[in-house]
Length: 320
Image (cartoon, rainbow, N blue to C red; front, side):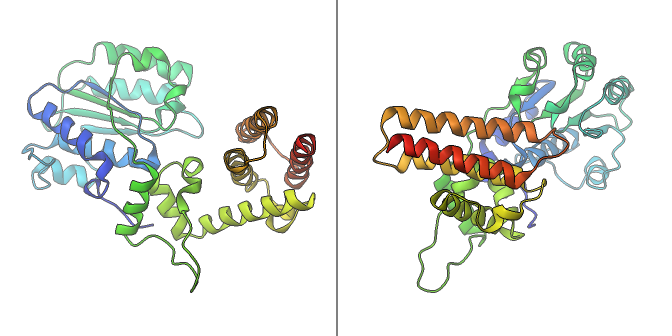
């Protein structure tokens, strides 16, 4: 995947500049909550915030990149910067206790002590509670950056102790323009019209993940699922790639079905209100199954897909 710098993600320009201004004026909050998905540059934003906070010669556009602190940061050896990621599926209490202890130690480089907690929605109850005292009484020259892909999973007590970094996610038109500017849009076959690749943006998570998907053939697989769902629903039985779905592929396939159902309701001119409501309810059922599958040990993926095809066709038969 192509590596992007923060200056290549225009939707993050304004919030980053706002943070730099607060930092330069000494008004930045000690705890910053980034409700910015990884696919929108959440990791990169957190990293650049930390870099700027630790820089000894901050510039109007961010860290100078040349001071001793910047060199240590870029080498990932800065003793006052601590990055926390999930250990397995959770951020565990011992990780947070160890972090809080390190933040009490005097900064070795004489500047800020910074913690970056990535995907903080992976806190368990114990680890979240272990962080609360430090959020309430952080001490001087401490910056804690919490990044999350799923803000709804955070405890209210965590959210209330952080400054939320406001930003506006790019719309589909802006995402298409961004992909085009970096020459990431696939070229259609000769004589065919280009299609809108942003149809799957909500399930992928953001433009960075869409760019990665376009580059590694994952997008083509999603596109094939969409074609195969349409053909399978029309025929009443599984076709194409849906016949041999693995347990690793089923969540992607069902997410595509969810998007297909929502588009079906939007585009169909013959649906009455009750039928549309039934299909929307069915799409919600599919979405809930996607969440369950993340923790299920095993599943007969093709059988589940066939059940959904039959259920949808019954809804359409009811309409007719």
